[in-house]
Image 1 (cartoon, rainbow, N blue to C red):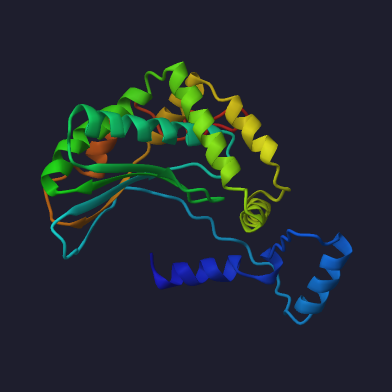
Image 2: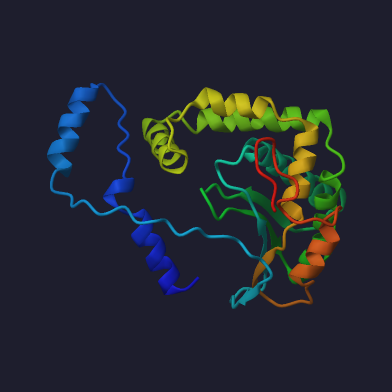
Length: 267
C-alpha cells in the first residue's frame, strides 16, 4: 500500500456523490428530506470520478517486527466481490472452515494455536483470510493441518455442516440488525456497494439455497488463487505463496475458471 494508492482511493470514494443517508426512527420521508436539505445544502458537489479497481495479485510475503514471543500470521487468497453470485456460498464456506480448523487443530490434535477465517466484503478487492496465532512451534504444527483442511473442503462437505453454518449465520445476521444504528449501517453500505435497497430477506434466501456442491465449487475457485502472507513476531521457515497454492488446490486451474452461475468465464 502506497500513499498514492490511498489518496486515489479516498478521492474516488469519499465524495458527496457517494453519500448515503440512512435514518431510523419515528420520522417521515418528508421530514428526513427537509433535514437533509437544510444540513447538507452547502456541501460542495464534485464531478463523479471513476473509481480505481483494485485486484489482489498475490505472491507477496511480508514479515513485520513484533516485540512479543508469540507469532501471528495471515494468509490471504484472492476473494470475490460483495456482488458476486457466490457471496452466500463463501460465507457458509468460511463458517465451515472455521469449525474444521478449531476441531482438527485444537480439539483433535491439541495444538495450542488459535485460528480464524474471514472473507472481506467489498465491491472489488476482496480477500479470503486464514489467520494463525501462537508460538512459532505451534504455528509450524498447525499450518500443515490448515492446508489439509483447505484441500478437504474442496472435495467433501457434509449436509449437517451446511445446516449448522446456515443456522449460525442466520442468527448472527439477525442479531446484527437489532440496533437501529446497525440497520442504518447495513442499508448504507449495501446501497453503496450494490446500488440497490437492502433486503434482509433476500440475504437469508440466498444462504438457504447454498448446497454442498456450491461450497466445494467456490472453495476450488478461491483456493486456486495465488495467496499473500503477512507474519508478525518470530521467524520460522515458511512455504512460499507459490508452494502454498500448490499444496491447497486440488485442480490446476486459475481462480476464475469456476464461475458461479451467471458469471462470464475468463477469456
